[in-house]
Image (cartoon, rainbow, N blue to C red; front, side, top):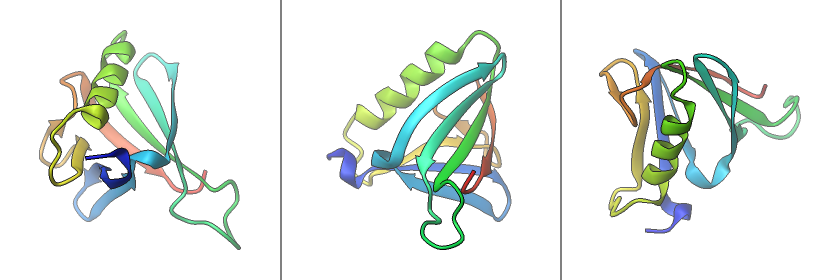
Length: 110
């Protein structure tokens, strides 16, 4: 399955989940001991959008940013994902792409 048909899923609370096409991942920034910031082409575009970039922040174990980044890339490139549905962080059900991911939060159009 190619990247055009893969989606990354995040859930940080009941009734608070979001999903992005993997191809909309612009990059990952590690700018704190326990955070990785994933930047996506925004789900909100056009009039009213400020930057057209959404930010998904993963809470991670200190000094594990490289391992988590590698796990995300492997999940996207791995196969077969016959459904195209890839859970990166589901805090409600404690399902994470890597054991050193402990939480997630999103800021839309940031």
